[in-house]
Amino acid sequence: MTTNENKNYAPEHTPRLQWAKAAPEVYKAMIKLNAAAEQGLDPTIAELVKIRASQLNHCALCLDMHTKDALAAGETVERIIQLNAWEESQHFYTEKELAALELTEAITVLTEGFVPDEVYEKAAEHFEEAELAHLIAAITVINAWNRFGVTTRGVPGHYTPGMYK
Image (cartoon, rainbow, N blue to C red; front, side):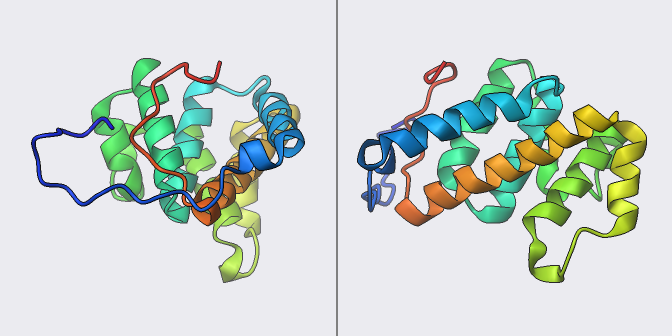
């Protein structure tokens, strides 16, 4: 665990299921889908999208992984911290990143009905068609990863950047 061992923290929870071991063909397919989705997508935007979707989905495992990966890739702590309040902290992000974050929220939180035309159109202004298709795919894939992580109770705190590359 990466937390300070001298603190009196609550104990780690136990995962419900090691789904990658129980269904390795699904896990391998997800890895391939993830790689295909991110082809041609700006790696910074890809990590911001992963972090934001994981925040919305409360996936601690994915938050641990993608914040560490973003930091290792040179992302700033400040931008990661502000990501949860990006609408109030827009000056930390480019217009293109903001469009990606807004689209991420619309796709991730479908309980509000649908992806609004204005959100989609704003993203389409900043991303070429193929890049937009990859962005939508990347958002969809991180949502799938989040659902595996949350459902199986993946345990955060053990990931190191590059661990799965």
